[in-house]
Length: 108
Length: 460
Image 1 (cartoon, chains in turn green, blue):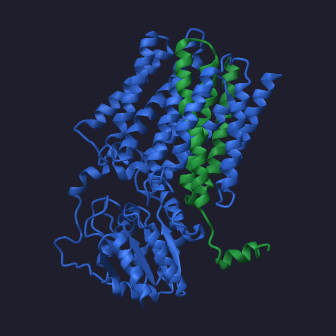
Image 2 (tube, rainbow over the protein chains, first blue to last red; image 1 turned 90 degrees about the vertical axis):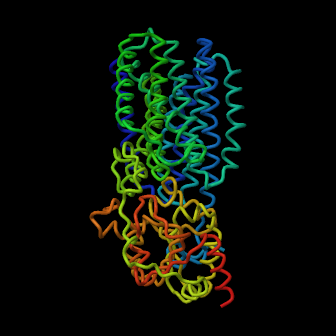
């Protein structure tokens, strides 16, 4: 049992480090999409909710699990849609010469 | 075999989540990143559904269907100006799910849980319920269902400390298996109350920090779920969310010149009246300018920097700003946008609002990118921003905002400030920028003033 917890702690701590390193590189330009994306990812509690709702363990567990599946699904579905929608609004200017030089002329 | 598939799906989902967040480090890879993350989510859900533990799919189908029906309009209909409250309500939903899973686990397995699992479930419901309470209040304030000013009373901090202390004590009792289910439910109720009580005294202007911090708590609640039910994908994504929220709240409080504890226990805006006014009582005069003269100045400028503040977003004037910028560009001028980290109601909010108005993102500059270059600007056009351009942050050690990173607009060759009147900003202090010899004030509603400027430039 103690070993399991220790292994889980490994996973948690390392993922936390990766998270810090990756997220520190997200520019302020994209901080709102970042929060929107992480709130969609937080819908991962769906994984626990599904087991509670469909595990046939007890009435309490089924009811609470079903509510949890609902709210987590709202986050997953709504969160990914709105993040995509938001990022679709970020457009580069077509007459930006500096960047045109950097990326080369558009393929005709 | 089935178990292997489930575990592999979790592993791949975790990798896809990390790659997804990595994609967000650049605007041109961001969409691909979000697609990765969404695919990872789908994989994790499918993997979970094949688990042997799941014996009944009827309730699951119901939850998924209802959630999708509510989720789609929340994704497609919510306007970008409402993003802060949209995130707040998403935190409520996410934390509700985590809390309920914790209750279900504890209800079914309390007798067989080892010490580590009891700690994990305890933390899960405490962080979850705290986030639910806090994010509901944050939502109410941002949606203006509740007054956005800080709600304070005497001895508030003492009450909050005691409440948190009681939560910790009860958590200890639950972990020690004292009190059974009733005490477990009491723990949830107390944490929920603590969440409400902690966010009530925080003002609307401080919401970026609060929302980011609650994001972090909700991530940690997910991670605690992962510990409780030995689920690695929950551990990984919970750690990612937790790290993200924590980093953003640090950045935001730094940008507002406040420490964490000051945001959480300071109730900043409540003492606005006490702050000294620089202009009042002295012979400083802010010089007004007519729309005609401002238009001429802008039309013949070759280097214009627009500084949008929350006042611009409130007036919904983004489209007029873009129209004005396009006119200046057509006449050969260059227009850039200087974005302060706390210009909106949540981290990065102003960028989204400008992008929505079809302003290309490569013209949006972070404070650090543009500050060294502001002295080159012929005109700095400040629209509904105040504290974030107040030079007192650099020059006046007695000012409450001293030390706050600001946009050095006062270094520009000339400054035009669009402002409704001479009222003070959130910090409740006067702004010396307005009395500078190079500064002109264009009074009036931001949107109306911009429309006038556009008409004037067109007729030149």
